[in-house]
Length: 261
Ligand code: ADP
Ligand code: MG
Image (cartoon, rainbow, N blue to C red; front, side):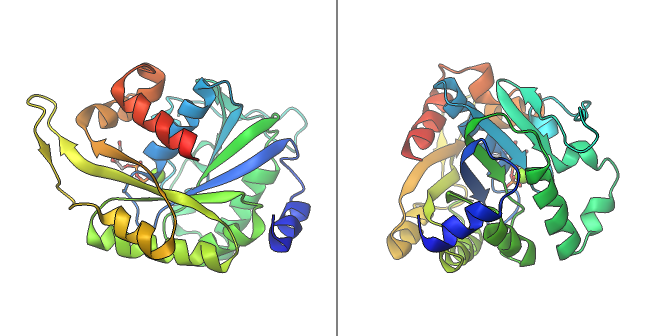
């Protein structure tokens, strides 16, 4: 660890039993940050690794819907801390469990950052090998504050192969480099569209985009996930593909990404 990382570790009052914090980040929204974070977390848990997920995406928390826990609220055994909500073996907490109206969407940076740090520090995380943090998209004030105040072991940047997404992903890599958080690699999501009925493959968002980024910044491509209707349907149903079909081909892809992390 660098000195800066160790200083950050010291600053963290909560989450003492958490060994590694992995930030899943993206320059743009809607590229598949949450889908990747959850399916990779499930793939890790499938190997017997203890995993938690913190949904820090204040502007679009989707963990409760995607894990089928939207009707639950964290309990507080001591009136100060929150017990995580368990789903498919993952210990979870989300800004979405706590803010049920639209107010969080208009929070300014400092308020949003504070809420997220509280969510991290005031959740009674069990002993975890990995806490996966689904970060808000972008490289603004909130992301920077979080990257500097959360003792992140490493960051995973999710992008599609589309030029505009890659441009933003590039900014994400630069931001993590600046704040001394190692970028573990890039996940190229929606790399090709696979037709459910005919199996035809089409590169809707372009070819090999993540590779150029990977070459420029010397960070590996951890894996590629195709655009497939089944992945979307499973998330909408609250049962991510890796939980529903752990032996299936998509789960295998997420397992490879998990292994590369
Ligand atoms: P983000 O967290 O980056 O905003 P999401 O993970 O919520 O993005 O993904 C956006 C939408 O696209 C969701 O409805 C999700 O189900 C869908 N989606 C993400 N990745 C895929 C994929 N590889 N194939 C099909 N649908 C996907
Ligand atoms: Mg999301």
